[in-house]
Image (cartoon, rainbow, N blue to C red; front, side):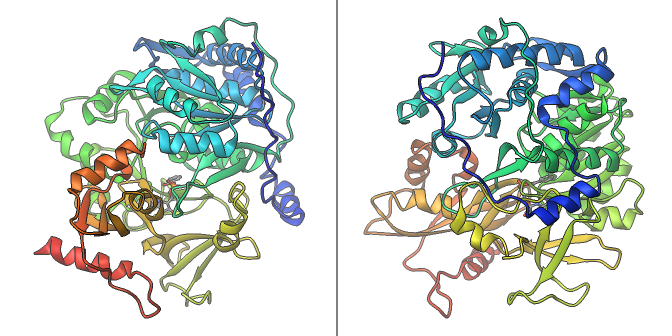
Length: 549
Ligand code: OOB
């Protein structure tokens, strides 16, 4: 079976200027290695070691050596080629933390196709957009996970697309192509690729009406993976528990799954994020390291006293994705017996780590320092002027693994990046005299629900589609557990609908559950700023006041 449709090549994305590419190559940061050869090269060195432990789509427990994983990836690669999927094609990957995730990822890399990393929580609004916008040649799902049938989602998505992708299913495939069928092939050789080319498209947490896709190159991403592994002490004895969704940048590359595979260690996939499941796996698999968002770290701290599991193998708990309060960070070592490492990163590039041998004060009160001496950091005031050292301001960054532009978004790029290529992170930070970053807040219209990012405008766009809604503003409200939750202020035409009806409306439009507002508040009008824009600051303040009452 071959694809009838020829996909367009990837639209050229903002590349690094030649003088920077030269600098990063000259410094040895960017090498010729690509993700196509990544696993084959590790297999030569670590062949018989266990690479991945976890359940498969059918719930069977699997332990794959590097050789097993490479063999699977090479066979699936041939299966993909047989479907007509070739180098440069985009493949939307939406798999939970099952072994097939790693197998398919390595297979897609092997043929030089580009994964587009969807999250298991995404629904038809997001997946339809990713498929359309990236002109995807394939969409890979698990039949079912966490009580949700992804084949139904695939049906909805495919029905709406002019150029539907091949749907490949791990587990019972129904009318779609079974992943098992792709495996029934002879292994394919690894593609020969340029390491400066785009390797995949990662998702941005986003601030805009439609999600943005992040083009990362082989050379820039592999540099961050190698350095992250070194900074975080990952080696062949590392056994990393992956609790967060595997496709997110943090568990994937900071140092994550790729950092562990780079080093010959073992990835242990957790089927769910509960402390009970995680503690049992730490004990049985002698896990040494894990990465969590703050609410999960808090849940582990709360669960520890009622568990008698042996967690003594755990050496490092990374916490990132959202601010981890110092009071909580302080408790990790005494109560869980491991070092805490704060990670402040972004899928666009820049990642900061507290170092494992930093003093306690630095570890609990800062969000770390950059990976690279070539990560350029600017802290600017509202008029783009540098603040005095140690003062708070907007964080901008440029460096050897930070993008110069989003995929096919020239208009947004013109404001999200400065003319000299600095990325405006939207984070408000200060830099200590030792060069560590403290995150103090956020200037972007995004809600950080315990690490899950919600773009205000995206939710607003869906809400205004409701016939009774005149205007809407989505803002964050403080929350003890998640740090923030989402509140939609809504102005209606006539009698307001029930809040529940609006939430159902969003769900029916295929929006991921984590983007559905936690609270809907009907108002007569919005407070406005001096120039007549909706004042989100004022809305947040009013909300905080009502929550206190
Ligand atoms: C990670 O990546 P994204 O792309 O989901 O989100 C990036 C944004 C940052 O701009 C910042 O607003 C927030 O998430 N953030 C933090 C944080 N880590 C991320 N805010 C405060 N403290 C932290 N430690 O979230 C991500 C990517 C790679 C590694 C770790 C996290």
